[in-house]
Image 1 (cartoon, rainbow, N blue to C red):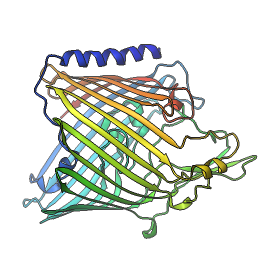
Image 2 (image 1 turned 120 degrees about the vertical axis):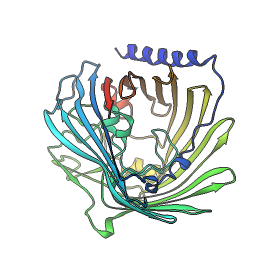
Image 3 (image 1 turned 180 degrees about the horizontal axis):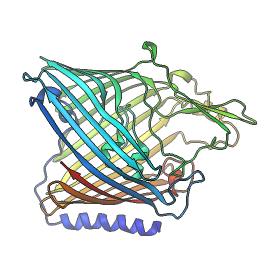
Image 4 (image 1 turned 135 degrees about the vertical axis):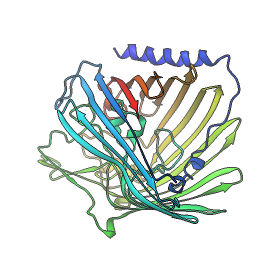
Length: 441
């Protein structure tokens, strides 16, 4: 079955390329930095309401089921209603945005609701203030994040939900300053939100402490001392869109501490302290966009690297290039790397039986996107391969707009690797195909 999906991915890539061979007229993609300059003061209508209905199904294709599994071979099965309500004062200075979902999870057999975003804002002169739940995106990476330290929902992404559900909102305040020579934004988040990792009920993934009887989770307490603070300063510099970042908060994925290494009965998952310092740069290059990003992850709670429960400090680097090769055909490539500090201390502190990470992790990725028939068809393929971990991830997808309001999509999430302890390799038995129907109103 996995070979079938591999052939599907290759065939889709060839289809995209062959459909583009006779096309020309390249145009450079839009810079992320330029896109991020939009603010709420552009909303000058009193109230606007729109939304969509979304049906989503994902089916595991490996024939295997997790030990704690629910739903048989189904990874996802839900109907979802989204309502987006936005409004502004007549002057446009005051505004609000609310994006909420109500959905039925057919696997868990329950109704639930989710506030995706809900904030109020005020703009005056160069300043824009937002207060409430908001989704914030920083950096220039495509699915590999260096200075985007805000929470992600990896279960949603690997289940085949739309890309927008990869990002989770944070509850806090954001102030943006837009000046003639310098722009800046600062974010304060008093309520910690972790990454949402794949659930053991629907995915296979590596958890060395899964058999420990008592499982506890400790999140940072709410208070001024534990408030996350993030700063971004950006401007145009020598034809580059340059951003400088700083963050003080916590790792989004937990470490785990055992009450007894020899015979553990309790595993406590906690979120160690973290600071991140980095920069990114983008510019037009050979009719495309060239991107660079780097960040230093300062693991403040264990700078010596001797505590095996806490990730070591590390460097993260990324380089990418995106270009429209022909009309309605875009290609992008990336190289991403992580370099661990104090590697000898990490190896010496590793408990017996625990898998050892490499000092360097490298990943090469590519994304191909082809639009056909007046952009009513979209063919895409994202592929990532790590030569250091020897694992891979493929996501081919086909979407079709039946009408201006109604669209359908189908695709697959394909994982592989030699080891069940690497990032993609651990999901080796979780291959799935997904189908979506969406109606916008």
